[in-house]
Structures are given as C-alpha cells and as structure tokens.
Image 1 (tube, rainbow, N blue to C red):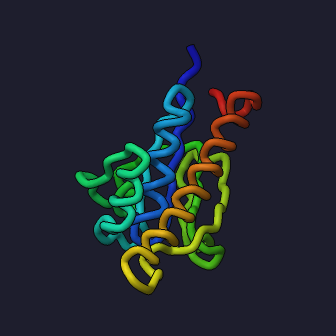
Image 2: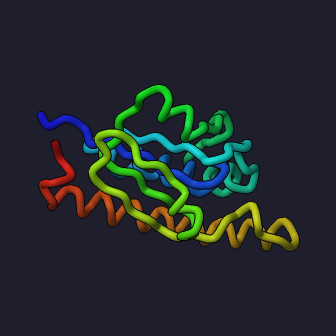
Length: 150
C-alpha cells in the first residue's frame, strides 16, 4: 500500500477556511492523505464556521488552532502546502523541508463577514460549499494522478 501524502492547509488564523479544508479532505481523501491545518497568527475557531459545518455533519466544536511556525519548529514534513486565503497572505506562508508542491486557493474570510447572524451564516455557507467543492476536485484528481501518491 502506498504511504499517505502529507498536506498542510494554511490561512491567517486557522479559525475558518483552513479548518474547513482540513475537515473536508479528511472526509474525501482520508485514504490518500494525512492532513493538518495551521495559521500564521492562530486565533480561535469561528463559531459561525462551527455552526455551518455542523449542518453538513462535521463537528469542529472541539478543534483547536495551530501555529504554522510551531509546526515548522517541530520539524513537521509536508509534501504540499495549500493556502486557502488571499494571495498576499499566501505569499507569507513558509516553505517546509521536503515540500514539493504549493497551491493557493483563494476564498473570502468568514471573520470579515458582516450583517445579521443569518446573513453571515449564508455567506459562510457559500465559502464552506466552495471549499468542499475544491477539496472534492483535489481528492478526485489525486486518485488519477500518480505524483500525489508516494
């Protein structure tokens, strides 16, 4: 059996987008990937993200955020780093030893959404669905492209 390809999702606070991406890759690509997520300046999990992820059967309520620099100092090795924030932030992300791929997926930041609670949830659901679709496509591609499997 092939070993798993190690993926790290990174964003600013590890409170929303990177957490959703990690959860969806565990759901759709657990047979191919080991996955973690981290932030450049970690915060706490966005409660709106917890709520909309619960709607699709994924519980993030007990998740904690991680600092990408802590993972680097611990000597973690990843084959690919995927940033899930805007390009300017993506460029701040680190290169890890052994990393062979770097991808940038740009999604709006749920922590910046404003309005009534239901309006914020609706915007967060849209981001959730876009991330889920990107992760599904990524996992499907990995099943057909041999370089994802080591």
